[in-house]
Length: 404
Image (cartoon, rainbow, N blue to C red):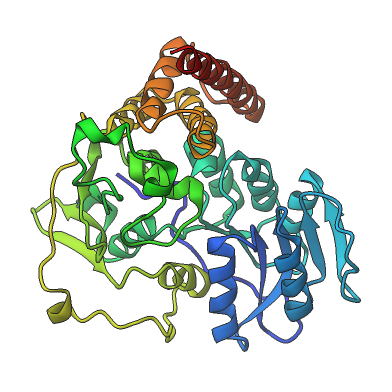
């Protein structure tokens, strides 16, 4: 086994005239985007915000523009407020690409969730930017395209997700030939101890009450179904060039051990830290250096016990569906990810139940005729097909429920 295609990162070449690393952020108003800016605030001598892209939270985006004065900003819809002097504004998908390829950027932080980041990531790689990645879906759907492209251009992909960052850090300590398997840890979400018979009664509010992490709504619901871990499993397959069969998932409610690797002699290496996303974000920005982070120190005697258990795939079938899609490869992971996007949105809107989510995903996966991922167009076409199928199926579920 070797780490993913040229995965080992290299240091950035600073383009800023003052020697600071130029940072562009896709999704600056989201959870990861805001925490990235908090890391930059702590080290203003090391980093300079050069471009920002955000969705519809224009009030927060305007405050960010006034504070950081980037040369470029992109918003999902027209931005009526006046930009600070020296900041150029772009709207829509072209704006994401413009931010991802900003000439002053050394590192592009991909903090947006969903499939909208796919094309901007490809453009950023072609432009030679280092990618600090917090978006699972792009690699899940197009890892077969993105990782070879990054290798071709000598571009580093540095994972921000705490689990993949942990594996990355552990892999630094061992030669690739000695790695036996990767072990992703999962908190188990808010329903870890909820009886199976009660799961279908859980509301969006219940599912959003994550016991450990503060995340966006989509990721939090995926954590509750364990789909988040399933997507991470497929992502790890691509990032670290490890077969799906060589990646395990273990439930670890304390979220102190962020992930582990097992070596060929039976030894295991783990990365431990307080559950705070600023640590993996900062490491992705500063690699190979480590800087003071301001994160609460981990005191194991205060933590007390650490617990581990196997995931219950009967109660949480989404994890099993993700493993099956990852093993099938091709466009199956795209179907899974796109349909999950639609199903989670329907659950958050109160249209379907918690238990409907994996049922809908399973049905759509069964309907799909798999094909290899050789072109981005195939990914985008499959994405659109899966969303249409999911919407049709959800409408049928809603109609059936209202008829009862």
